[in-house]
Image (cartoon, rainbow, N blue to C red; front, side):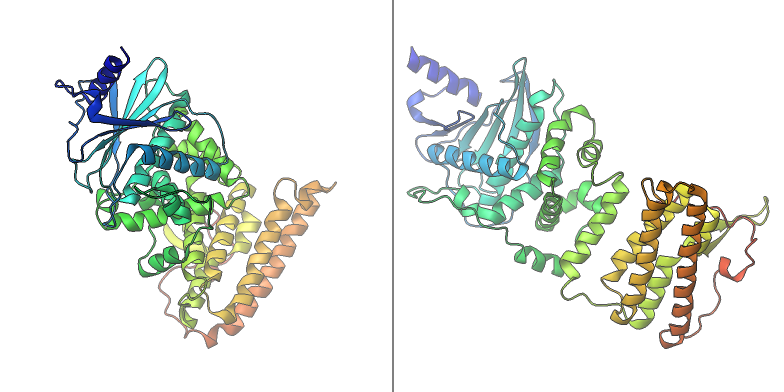
Length: 469
């Protein structure tokens, strides 16, 4: 009876009409019971690709993207399930969780498939929950195997509380976490035949190869990372995508509560139709908008790739970049029947004339711009930049909810005093900058209307060009 049941299970799992005897297959189970690996006993005997009609409720989640060529890893069921458990343990450690699993993951080893064949991950929905089936070639590229297993594990975690609609797991999360795990201890994950596990060792992430790669190729933008074009995640370009995703995940985990936030994101994925909403909810202590994430990512890339060696802006470029960071764009309306003209106003005008909420947003944007510029500006201009940045930040700290100015008994006089103090310091810094101008640039031709060249009562100059970021 037991032999008949095993033969039926193998036939059902492989979707074959001409089921082979159970003796032709080898099946191994992991210690936790979550993983089951099956392979033909005789090497080279193909396992038919599962038909979608064989299991009516099977839903193909995706095929894992191919990796670059490297030493191939032959798969054996008994070693594969051990490797899966080790990857799961390290992934749980990275996400700061040790929760019990719910969905089983069946691994089908097919030696007839090419080594660079994309593993096929399928989700099987039932009233009891989600289970998964992962078809793998043997031998297989190690990086490709790790990505496939990480993808399956993330899907299992995310769909524990999902209904019939599978959660959307972003590609950067799969690529970033798998690359991070590989950088830590890939040799300890994947056991080769005739090898022995002699010790447990987790090494620190080695980011030097990653830094070298991103110095040779510009890092992807936040938009390219989150919504990659097909060519970005295919062929050799996928290595750059993985490098950027690894850096993105690594920097998220550097937050004090980063692993908790990332784990919460995985749990919350089924609750939203897109992962962006889930991300902002999980990382709400750090980001309010995707624009904040984009600015943070830009700063991360500059610091990671340029901090030690960055080609600094020259004197003239540094001067103009500092001017741009201090300018606030506005639209000047001279009459209703004319298009508005573009202009820039000073931070002092923003502080004195704009509504508090708009002024705070514009000043936050200026502070972010100054922070990013600091890494590449000419060193002799950095003290001046730091003074601007300190003045802006101090004013924001004093005037935001809970700040010194709003906690005072007489709020309005304190606010007026904070404005006057900030504007006085900014005027002094502008005078200092004007005195240095001749040493950096020659007087430029007047090509754009500037609110500085008009009386304070310039009509329309109190309206921002666009809603401040």
